[in-house]
Length: 109
Image 1 (cartoon, rainbow, N blue to C red):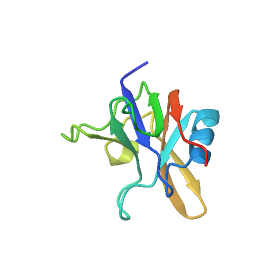
Image 2 (image 1 turned 60 degrees about the vertical axis):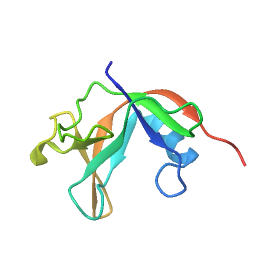
Image 3 (image 1 turned 45 degrees about the horizontal axis):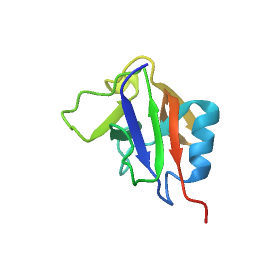
């Protein structure tokens, strides 16, 4: 399918609820950082042994930005792969990439 990527658990953007939604939809969404271009993003590689979060693969290549740690998927009109789709919720644009979930590791509280 492709390389491994992961998102680390956090209370803002990668909660267990978000991981469940990603597993069901098989999609990773992203708005981009600091009001920039819509982009889905994740860490390159597998989730670390002691880390909480979600791990997945995708057949869609990430942008070649020279960053060995972060993977970005931009919309086609912003230089991304044609398989990256636009999703609009309210007045906010999101970049969306199809994923294959592989692992979820979250501690219940």
